Image (tube, rainbow, N blue to C red; front, side, top):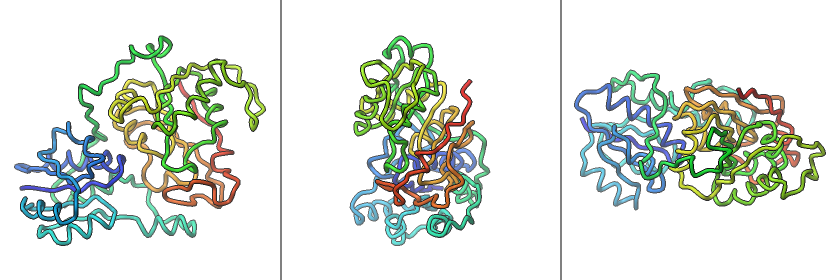
Length: 333
């Protein structure tokens, strides 16, 4: 049997699809598992031993022609976007499609009507392949890091070589991130050496956090009148590493603090204890940490939450209470 698994566009979508891919290869005899993935995220699967061949989304006609030539016995579409649905409609192979909660998500965001089960997005993907004979397992997510992307913490400042906590400060929308002064407050409460991870766009915010705790910046923020007594070690790694290298840093960490972003999936893959902070979105949408210990910090008493399934560049209400007033209620051994 030759099967094609179509992955979603985001990094999280690809990582969340790995248990279904593994299940196909392990539970079904004589199967060759191919994947169709966007070029920007294909590197996440190049080291995956369960995949026979990777196909890339290209111009629609080019992709369609190549898929037709492969003559797949079955196609499993785990992508919720319209692009893959339209493309695959013209590929003459039996298809199975992910059952989505798109309308239920819309009802939750628009009218605050919660009809979504607590089932994780990964479980929905596994359900899509169960009829083919996939039983599923308890092994969690897969993330295979190439040897050349391994990062040694011996290259970090000395305070980090005995262990550190990762704080992933990146998010695709501002309403999914803490304000800068609250990031500093959270770092103070963690009281461990902290590696700040994110993209080059997060570098300036990370530099402000570093300067605050290094003593080179102001010890008091305008919007936060409390005095931070603890001296926290900060390493600004934002924009310095590739995504695979950041995954290697997470793999060696003691725990991970993160917003609603792709790092949730990475931390889950390495069974790290995750402390997640949700703002305008909600963990009820199914993208919470998977098969690992986790604590979700979010305001469940706000009538305006969730205001979006994705996020905004500013709070629609103007008060941003979902992040501004979130309680940092966690225990870090």
